Image (cartoon, rainbow, N blue to C red; front, side, top):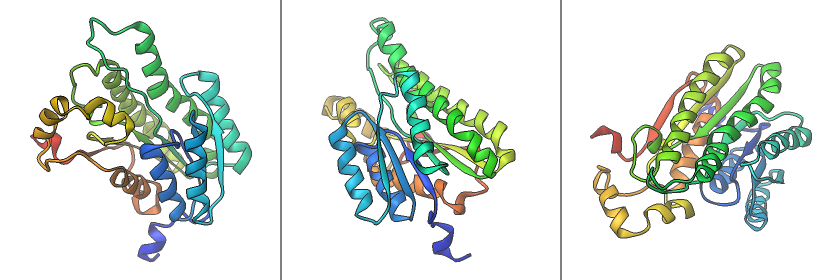
Length: 255
C-alpha cells in the first residue's frame, strides 16, 4: 500500500459532531479532501450549510443533521439519521463540546449537567448507536476530541475538565470492548485552540498570557493542526493505535 493509500479515506463515511465551526468544520473538510463522505451535526444551520458547501466543493457528499446533543434523544436521533443516510458510518468524530466556566462554589447544577451531557454523554450515545454496524463490518474508527484540561486541572474549568477526563476513560473503555472487532478508539487532547469557544475562554490577554507562558512552543494551536491528527487517526496509517489519549499541546504537559 502506497503512502497516499495509507492516508486515504476513499469509500469511507464519517460523522463529525460540532461541524458548524471550529475544529469540527475544518475536520469535516479535511476528511472530505481525503475521500470520505461526511455527515455533520450542530445547532447552527448557517454554519452547517457553510461546511456542507466546503465539503461538496471537494466532490464529496455531505448530509446536515441539526441536533442539540445536550439532549439524549437528539444525540440518538443524530446517530440514527447518519446511519439511515449512508447505511453505515466508518468514522465517528465526537468533537462537539461546550464550556461553562465558573468557580466551583458558584457553578450551577444546570451548567454542570449541560456540560457533562454534551461533552461526555453524547459521545457515549453516538458511539453506542454507531458501534453495532462497525462491529458487524469488523472495522471502525472513533476519535474523541478531548482536551488538555482533561488531564490537567484549570481554574474555573471544573465541569469541563471533569467531562473531558471522563471522555478519556470512556475512550479506553471503548478500546477495551471493541478493539477485538478491529475498531480503533482514541482521544485527542489539544491545548487552547483559538476557536470561538477558545477565544471566549482565553482571548482576554489577562487570562491568555499566563497560559501561553506554560506552553513551551509559546503559542496556541490552530484548528487545522487538530484536524490533521484527526485525519491520521481516521486513516489506515493509524491502525495499531488504540485506546490512546494523544496530547497536541505544544509541550504543555512536558513541564
